[in-house]
Length: 123
Image (tube, rainbow, N blue to C red; front, side, top):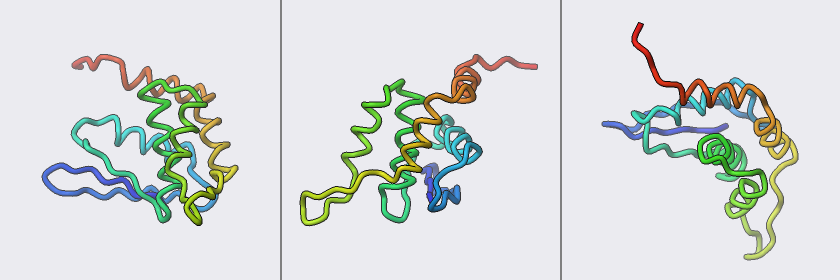
């Protein structure tokens, strides 16, 4: 399960409910919408281990807002893996890696970015 906190006058918790099998497209879009709103800044992302869903969501932000390429996203996510015995790290779960790749190649993600960056007009 992923937890997203935004710090306004008080901490606002938003549970996205990402489970063992990873995020859904709807949860990823909900997360991106939260992060895209400056009223929610700063944002803290956490999950049970701090490296599963949180790592995926951090990767989504880096790709979606910072235009990072896949190799940079994966390298950064690897920096936050738990080290066992001080040096052994387990790779990110394949389902989470697959979701990052899915998001990066998704045409929906491109449309979402265009929607977020489009100037708001009064109606």
